[in-house]
Amino acid sequence: MTIPMIKTDRLCHTYEDEDGKVVYALKDISLTVDKGEFVAIIGTNGSGKSTLAKHFNVLLTPTSGTCEVCGMRTDEAENIWKIRQHVGMVFQNPDNQIVAAIVEEDVAFGPENLGIPSDEIKSRVSDALKRVNMTIYAKHGPHLLSGGQKQRIAIAGILAMQCDCIVLDEPTAMLDPVGRKEVMDTLHQLNREGITVIIITHFMEEAVQAERVVVIDKAEVKMDGVPRHVFSKVKELKDMGLDVPVAAELAERLRQKGIPLPASIITEKELGDALCQLS
Image (cartoon, rainbow, N blue to C red; front, side):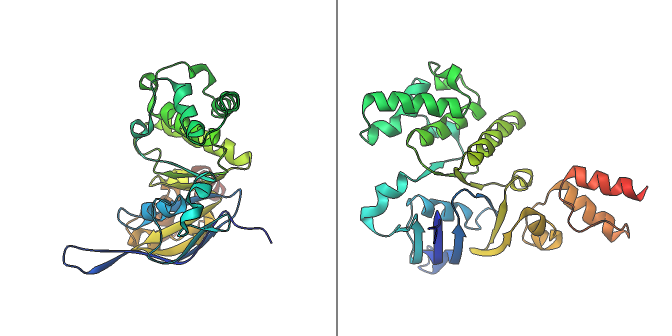
């Protein structure tokens, strides 16, 4: 039987508020992500999605329940560095992830800390920059790059450590549309190469591109399925305070006015095609 990339079983994460009351940031999360999947996690602010992501890289450990990465439990101290060699994280603000004055030195930072020999590091850095289409910027200062380019450098740093899973916590939130497209195109290419991608996003157009969408609301998983299934539940998502793809929302409004459109519409092309068939 194939070991999942990530598996949680009734994972809970709690903290005490200022009155000493126990608050659930995550409650009974049971989730499996297989190797090679592209999963989007969505939820409103405070729903618990970022807290969950931090468990995948052992930035947090469960209050109760378990989280396993490649079969290794995150609450066993001897597994921490092994897990972090499998799972790398990219955060929201690209400037907070830059640690060197030259791009290739920044990408080399992770492998250097793993004690990788110098010649091997050079090879890894070159390969990583090529995979994110940033080779020509190897000698540049990161401060000269756009937000999207900086995020691709952060991804290259993870690839240089030869991680086989990338977890991204709202990596495009601070980027313009061009930067968002650069990052998403890079992630899809890496996923085609076999890298497991887990992206937390509030852009529904990005979530639509995933193989699978997980919806978290008030610390619990409320939906888990392919984008077409999840985003067809327009009312339920809206009730949670979430946006839905524009095409899905418009199709739902048209259905309410009596126009017979399929419930499965989630893209602009699908909406256009369905409307053309009615004319």
